[in-house]
Length: 202
Image (cartoon, rainbow, N blue to C red):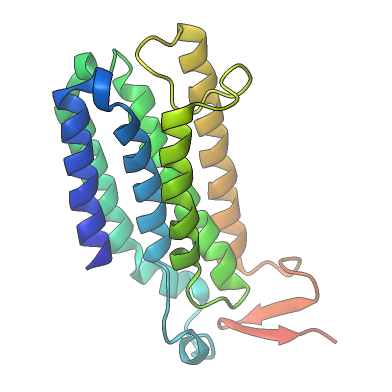
């Protein structure tokens, strides 16, 4: 239910941006943060203390929850393509990348924390991600060094810096997911994971 509501909100926010991008552009940052938060929610497990000792691996359990991320992915791609290049200051692909990287980042954080035995990391992540991206989109701190959400009046260089930053975030998050789901032996100090159960190595 939370993921469905988040997908609807993302569509509404981006439709408002399409309606008046010059005035409502910060809502695009909020939508990106909401995507990351909802992606992390997908992997929350209220019954983690029970599920983590089941024979199913973390990779299997995470894959079974991937449908929620797919819903968010489809919603984001559809609403950005519908907004079109003109409404997004001629940088539709850059905006599309922001949302996709946010999805991978949210999933990466949640999978990492789940691999360490935390049952509901997405809820905490959401409480930080949405306000942080909204504030960043409104205030544009450190834009002279790190452009995260370029505005319509931003230079081509600013957009390029943003694309590079989001691309790096997506790649790093993907590596984080792979390491967490592989339950690598070096993952986590002094812990080994078998079948989702964290045990103290001797």
